[in-house]
Image (cartoon, rainbow, N blue to C red; front, side):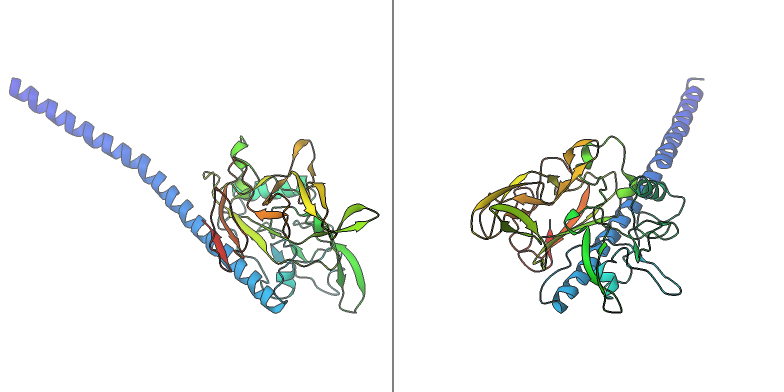
Length: 332
């Protein structure tokens, strides 16, 4: 009887072991699949960012070494008849054929996805003029239509909210760019809810901008301005805290044309409604030393969810991140 009971016990233990292993497999395998899928999408996002950078560098080669002042990203809008009326100026990479459409967002594969719904709801709440269904005669949508979502620039740049243009008939005018729409894309580690919409998007900001003096008052002047450098980054999965690149705006010294130092608040940002903080900036202060008042990278101790950052690779130095000192440098 003892032997029989012992055999029964071993049999039960064997069955229990099989059940436990099976349960572990059922739990572990789906998690492994999700992690692998997330890693694949992040890898595709990185590849997309390199493609955007290649278009930016090609643009610079053809424009005397200067970079686009701003980018919006997204997809070109097809019009019938007379076409758009230039209420808004389209992204230069798209207009001039360097990137007719931005790469599809790897994290948004379905019109029914959570990220897709969050993204277009956010655009509606922010009254983004470059959104699907906008009443403006836009030439490109920041993220594309609901059925096809491309990578779009989520870092506002109010410096270039309006820019001059020349239409097909040679007429000059001033039109909007949509760069003054603020998407909450900085210090994401502090946010309580996952930012599904932010996955797979990119940010771009040029180093353009200088001051001129008028009656001893320093004022911004972007007329005829050029960009000699830029900072370009992409966001990964909401599960990843990412890199700390964006810091809050601050009062920074700027050397005006006479060499006198002037103070300016939030040169690269504008107030966020209902929030005492200003939007995140990828540029940090370099203590006002000429010729550049800003340095690339503005870490503030709060991670931003940024997966990868690319710059031209000149004049970049940070304690928390490093970059190759060469064109097309990658922040590690």
